[in-house]
Length: 297
Image (cartoon, rainbow, N blue to C red; front, side, top):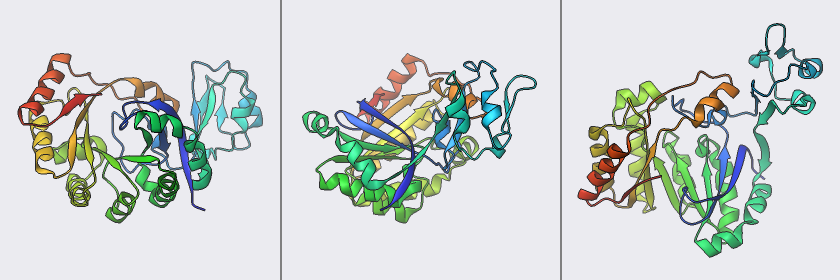
């Protein structure tokens, strides 16, 4: 049985596909989006999270850590490169300041856990959404889990950056009902600067997926000072119009939820502006004038 690493399961979600959905967050991502709000999803392996605001400086973590990760001489510093995510410090911490992000599960175990929500799916037209991180970095595990879910009549959606090997993407399409396809930017240089992504490869994968006839929603994070501009929106709208199976566009305005998470994994926070409500309305109207459905989520 295939195994994979996930870091969260969120239930009763209504913005990640049709109906009420359970969203599974896979560990590992090939991109490093500056504005990422799931920084704990980038590293493919389990990793230690530290909330400095909860720390009471009791020293119990340092006492039990076999690798000298915790140093409390002047504040609480972590030698993260020495950490193997054994979890000893997490179990010892009385304040809940430490947490492990990521656990290994096998496909049958995960599918059984997700199938507990099958009644909600049937009543609402919902299902399971695989997100991340980048779920297609674990394509074989995703496909095996999705196969079991499909055998139980459960709708499966996949959110992907498209910055993945084409063969894994097309293999996953066989057991996926809906794709939420991230279009993080339509300017190749800017995309690479802020995410490390290759626009040509991402668009080629999108075309290959569209040729298979799978329904696709284009998801567009809008970051003030980066890509929240009319030119980008126009290109996204034209991209949707050029596709055979585009179901519409979802605009995702920047929020600052990722700043706290960045600190917890030891990453530098990224700060940007949320696009103004008036600008967001205009972006939706631009799509509507072109005959493309668009909404803000």
